[in-house]
Image (cartoon, rainbow, N blue to C red):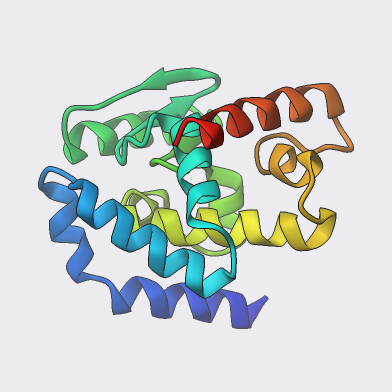
Amino acid sequence: MRTLLFFFALMAFSFVGHQAEAEEKFSHTKLLEYVSMSAKRWGIQEELILAVAKTESSINPLAINIRGKAYYPQDRNEALALIKKASQEGKSFDTGMMQLNVHTLKSIGVLPEIALDPYINILIGSWLLANDLRRFGHTWQAIGNYHTPVRKNPERAKAYAQKVISNLEGL
């Protein structure tokens, strides 16, 4: 666990420059660059990462989902205000284009504010997806587990996987 925390801390500090870019309009070129770097790092398909991001947030780096309700803030400050309010109210929420859950972020020692950075968000989301692919193989269970634990709700996980596959085919 300490190695994992160290890794993500190192990644956060290594890519502090990306934070300024998150403040600006996020470009398609940067998206593809970040997806490519994450795909190479974790050994998964770029298209699968993009399909998950499209399914999760319509590829919106500031997307926030609070207890099932999607928000698409106009800027980082608005996103941070939503995160702060949800945290203060003890609500579960998901952050960024890969919709990283606050509990997952907490378990790996990453603040939700850091996860708003598009590169960090894609890197962590891709890592989670790669872990599911290693665990379940290249199956709907791996894709579905990214969103919903298969053991808890296989029907919901399968429905999610079908959405991702549909988005993958549309790329």
